[in-house]
Length: 230
Image 1: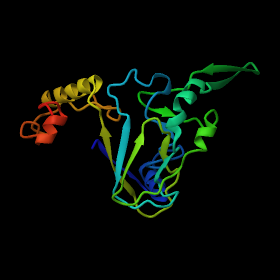
Image 2: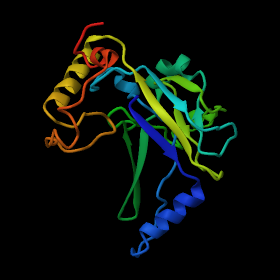
Image 3: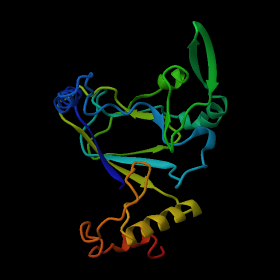
């Protein structure tokens, strides 16, 4: 398990955003927005510049989510089958410049930040159109290939938050062994664990505050952390 995620109803997120930003003159933003269609990998460099290899992703749904537009999971089913061909032929991003009344176009590679690639509404329109709602009963586990474009719904028109627990599966390969060693070293030295969703500073954590000194891993935890062998 790597984190817990929740999605507030859109009207509530907007109301809370307005309240929090009521002192600002500019247009307020909702407390929370949807996670638009994206990939959790860089298509052009699938195995480069990553701290770990996470080919299979997963969440366990703690709430019922059977209908569309309730903040639920969406995915382009089967896209991994033609992923390589798409990655090799993906169109670049076209940026339009206007200078002295004259227009010019610049072509740049599609952006990727870390392990996150945004699916562009214009250049990747055909991919966007394949992203559809997936009904998920409460208590279900959903697994997907990291080459699948996925999202949660643009709106949540329901009345209750959607809640999921995200899990990661890291195969026993060298890159992931190094990742596990680094995570163990961070724990032993009182540093916060590093991951793509964690942007905390490198400062040490007080071991007493986070109960590091008194914590004991389970037998499974020791194996996952690389303390003991499988």
